[in-house]
Amino acid sequence: MAARIVNEFTKGFWKEIAPLRFALGICPALAVSTKVESALGMGFAVVFVLCMSNVLVSAVRNIVPDKVRIAVFISIIATGVVIVELVMQAYFYPLFLVLGIWIPLIVVNCVVLGRAEAFARKNPVLLSLSDGLGMGLGFTLSLVVISSIREILGDGTWLGMMVLPEAYPGFGFLLRPPGAFVIFGLVLGIMNVISARLENKTA
Amino acid sequence: MSLREIIQMVLVLTIVAAVCAGGLAAVKMVTMEQIEYQQIKFIKEPALKKILTDYDNDPISDRIQLVTGKDARGRDVSTTFFLAKKGSQLVSLAFESTGSGYGGPIGVMIAIAPEDDVVQGIAVTTQSETPGLGTKIIDDPSFSAQFADKPLSANFSLSAAGGQIQAITGATVSSTGVSNAVNRGIELYQAVKPELDL
Image (spheres, rainbow over the protein chains, first blue to last red):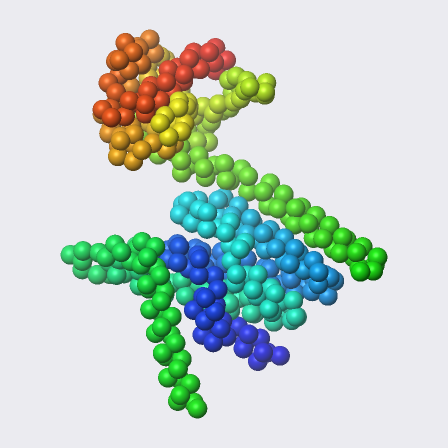
């Protein structure tokens, strides 16, 4: 059991990292990855919503009739998202101003509903929590990787600190939406090449 | 579909919806006050900092609400007044007023010294004007400076309307919006001054 819990947790970081393996949840991954700071804020909001929804969906999995399960899942997810939105407004207002519309849009983040449907409704609470935590942190990791590349190459900063020489002119293209697609594609490609190599070695 | 199934579906959905709504109401109640404070702090405080000078309290905690009129449906409309004090002496009070601009309402924070009825300064809080043109009402400090240090009896209309304010070239509608907001604010101040008990 303990091994399974660890396994469900770690799969979210590489083997099944959601945005890069299944292209799930890439809408916020593209939109808020201009700065590492907003990527982290978004990531942790998703971690919270994902853990909460996985735990609750798993807890009620035996009493919810199949025909109304999606409605129940969405109610649970939407509640979690509004809680995040209110708490963020109350205690992290500047972050709330940056993330704005993307917070309520977590409701339709495919990773969250996807994990409820594919995992939490068939597995016990502890495994679902571990799955949610791993998937959420994996999502955060993808956002941090993409936003690091965009912020460093686009602006010359990382988490707001100067990392490239002052004279670096900046590459504004990467900070605009098309740049997000290009970087996302490159990261996806590099990841596929690495996985293919790893598989060849073990085969 | 059996009757049992139908009842179970209705029951589960009702309970889930009720629990979710209850939870949200609880969170909303707990965070409401804090959210109001944060909104004031991050949206109104920059404007307050610009126009209030020489005070030693926190005008955001020392704010009062007064009913200042009625809306179209007869409900009370209240305005928040931020009180700036030095020692325990009230030196100025600031409040927000609105006028319509080119892209929507323009919010203007006005600071008035109650002692001698002088407008100490104004600052735009919210606006959705055309970037580069109408936004000069914020970006060009010399525009809002025209309102500062003038007695309430001054004419705050644009010069085209016989007043003392020079409109920003290319942004007449936005300038009019600010000027209207100030005029409306002064009217409001004079109406509630007796109530303020200064």
